Length: 426
Image (cartoon, rainbow, N blue to C red):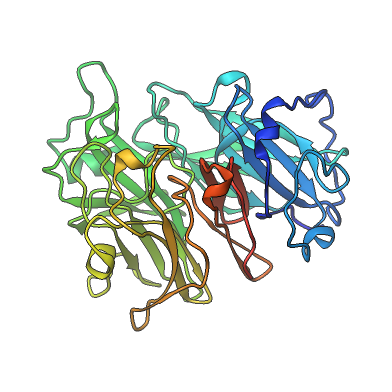
């Protein structure tokens, strides 16, 4: 059986999606077993109504060599339109892919683990789901899938200092890892709740990833829950190292002069692992409306569980103060980064009229050499990734101003766009 593949193609005239209605999408939940055809999925968000996500399945051999733009809705012979309305990052394995929020009927902040596949009509549908409790406006949406029998997620409303284990193929929760005792020993004076009873200590909201039998879980001590602001007095980024087999916290490690990695409630995965087994973490440096730090890349080497104190790539040092890297991926032991051309602040991240542009770079972690890729500069694609790998090829998404850009999401094997254009570079 072939896995479902997700990648990015050239898109035009996405405003047509605003008036499109797809009927009887909830009536066909018969899963498809044969994925030897039409096993590529493109997702488009146009955010004009409560059902903001559209998925399009297609056959790669019919579109691979065509460089002309497509109008997705009019090309019904190539693209099949469907709308299960899920968002907030996509992770794929085998015949399934997963999202961490549901948009249908306007509930764009409804957290959960929504497992999707293709039905007999080549449409995407929600196969099963796990509901997550929600007790604030910014539920965590981080998910880690190790293999077909093991994944991890954070359910803050149920247990804010725990990480849950689940089986992606049975969609059953299989265990829980409690980090609270380890955090209490690490930070006895921690403030656990604010005056309204909101959780002030989050686990796995920035980083949730696995390497060498260890689960790496971010630990964040908040100053303000509403915007996930970390106090300026916090000068380090904290990561719990958990032994998966015993479900015990071995230690909590810290990285200096860094408060955050990635971005809260983000579709962008801030960690990546290379072929050597080294794990790289990308800090945008943002602290929402708090004080930022430099954007930088740092790592944990293969066979080790501590940060590599001898290796760091500082974006501000190499490119200028205020410039950030907001997307990262490893490919053929090189690191690929999406870096702003000028200073990029938190207030710019959601501005539709921002003039910020991003460029693409290749970093060789062995000698720290940097090469600018011959790809046109892109819109910010705020909080979204632009890199995708499958079939041993790296695909890079870019957008130009002529398409009225909003947002684009790319994870390792899934892509989601909002009013944007995408092209393939192999």
